[in-house]
Length: 392
Image 1 (cartoon, rainbow, N blue to C red):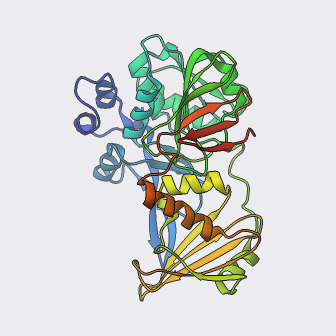
Image 2: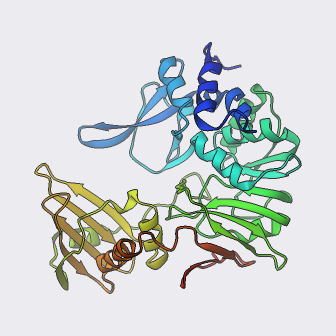
């Protein structure tokens, strides 16, 4: 059994009190599951010489930091970056910034997703595994016999099994690609990884009237949908934004396309269009409604923002079709000069969405109805607006 610090249950109880009301059925799981057990080592983002990296943290070396990180209701603890799992890293290891590939999802969001799933005492649940913490919460709430947890990574499944058994739980754990065939039939599917579109296999694996809760890649959208008689599902966009690591099919995400030439163009070129933007430069990736609406309108845009020492802000947008935009303003509140090139005017699309937000006070993606076809295509609609994410 791994070493555990005394008094962890006090931290867990405080986290439970801060997350849900005492009469909630999730209070006891939050207060009694030893989350630190699932994250004995983790990766913490840090800046070194102007570059972002991930530094290894070991709970045994700093129990206070361990308890602080493990029992923060609003913190996802990153356990794997690219192919590098913290369990296997050398002491004081540092890895370059890369996409995280596994974590213990922040407890407040895990519980909110379970609440959206509307679990009953007899629900058969499939949940994604990762560190195993969310699986442990489900076991404490439903009993291990009703919980199946899956992950594409054999090591994550083995590590989760070891830690779950230490915590007193033995659910069904399976190595599988969550976008492919699933190992059973379930009343609820809760995914703490995002998917490009709803996998058709989920609809096959959902029992009649079953419910799914998942996030969609590239957006901040959390959808809740119930299976319908035609084999599809209907539901809504949840009011809470959610962004998760996207599904992967191997040891790491595939290399990103080399777009160095397009970046060079975006940084230097005048482009075919030079205008003054309607609104100040914004960090699109930190929004959820604007980012999600833009992703539904023009899927696949890559965003970057730089702030110079004098306060000048420059935002870049790149699209795989060769479109690009650069917006530069002398400060946070000034209108930018916008250069655009390629087949689309990306900044114009962003300004159109922001104008919509200013006029209406919200965007139609907020609270939109969702219809999922049996093949996994997702259709969104609200107040005459509609958008579709095609089946993959």
